[in-house]
Length: 206
Ligand code: HEC
Ligand code: HEC
Image (tube, rainbow, N blue to C red):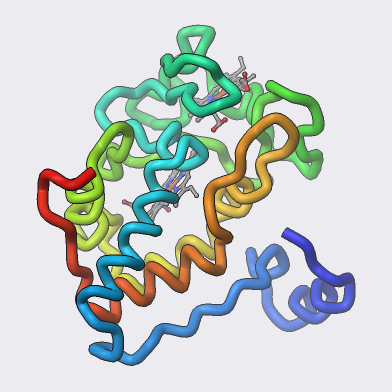
């Protein structure tokens, strides 16, 4: 994510909390202004992101094991060193994620270093289980408040912007492939899908 220093300074002065890290705009299209077909196309791109290793490696559901998958890992396998997230999803029962994924100003600067972000690194909630799931399945999960953290689509978009893990996924350091599109495009697609009343593809499509 590239900021001009000036933009950073303005954002930092005008808004507290995570906004200093953000140059994303949240502009939902008017409800109903996006056709079903356009909504499905937007969803297909949202799915490309959600199912990308930079996202799905942490969205592993009932298994409390983060995954190592994607080009930089060779074959898909559970996180090495027998890491378990436990009920806390943060590994506090065994080895805390932050032992290695430390909250830190430093970005990871060598291949295969543990990713670091300036917020607590942890596994996604059980209901947000996306790993290996189809487009239809993740679509149903993401539009249902019971499995999306009790959020409207607008709140999901705001969450994506505020979550620094997400900013990492588009700027993951050397050796790792970034999530496709950009955070801004992902948020635009999510909002377009929402404005089309969250259409989902048929169960068999992947
Ligand atoms: C002992 C150190 C250590 C601990 C503890 C640890 N990790 Fe990791 N983790 C790593 C390293 C090192 C990598 C990068 C490996 C590589 O790139 O080959 C990594 C990579 C990951 C990845 C893959 C990121 C990506 O997309 O490339 C996820 C997801 C992950 N860890 C989640 C967790 C979670 C969740 C916890 C706590 C439950 C945790 N880790 C605890 C060292 C650790
Ligand atoms: C380091 C692990 C990790 C990675 C990597 C990760 N997430 Fe998450 N995700 C989480 C956690 C933890 C939550 C719960 C946060 C909350 O509800 O405040 C979450 C929640 C979400 C939610 C809210 C919906 C729900 O069911 O809770 C969305 C949407 C989401 N993530 C999208 C993504 C996308 C898109 C990516 C990749 C660009 C991604 N995540 C990568 C850990 C991760």
